[in-house]
Amino acid sequence: MKQIIRSIAAMFTAGIILLLSLCSCQTNLHDGDGMVRSYTQISQEEAAQMMERDDGHCIVDVRTREEYETGHIPGAICVPNEEIGDTPPEALPDLNQILLVYCRSGRRSKEAAQKLFDLGYTHVYEFGGIIDWKGEIVAGEETSSNDEN
Image 1: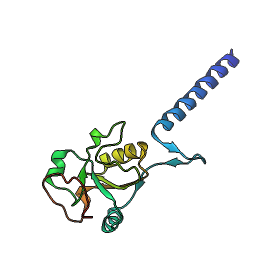
Image 2: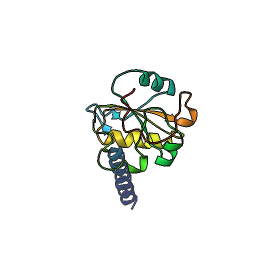
Image 3: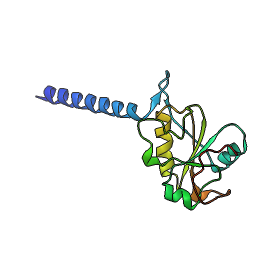
Image 4: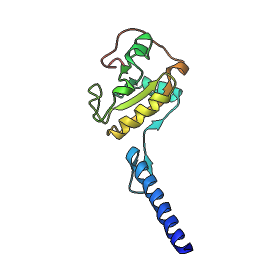
C-alpha cells in the first residue's frame, strides 16, 4: 500500500513539474543555454539619455488614448497595452527598432514590453511610469512618429 501511495505521489509531483515548465515556456523565450530572454528594464535617467540620441528609437506610451492626450513625453506614440495582441502593432512596423516603453506607473509598461518582446521586437526597453518622469511633458493629439527625436 505504501508503495502505491509513493508511486501516486511521484506521478503527481512529476505532473506538477511538467505543468509548471510548460507554463513558463509560454511567456518567455529561452536561448540555447536555458537562459530566459526578455525586454530590458532601465531607469528613467537611462531612458532620457537614450532619447537624446539620434538612433531611430521610438518612444511608446502604452496608456489609453485619453491618458496620452492629457500629457505624454514629446515624440511618444500611443499604442495602448490593451490593443497589443497576437500581431505586431501597425504603428511599430520595424521589429529591430529601439522601443522605449512607459505607462502611468510602470505596471502596464512591463506587460506591454513583454508582449512586444514576445511578438519578436528585439530592442525593447521599459522605463516605468510618467508619474515619475522628470523631463518635459506635452498634451494634445497623438504624434504619428517621433522623427524629431
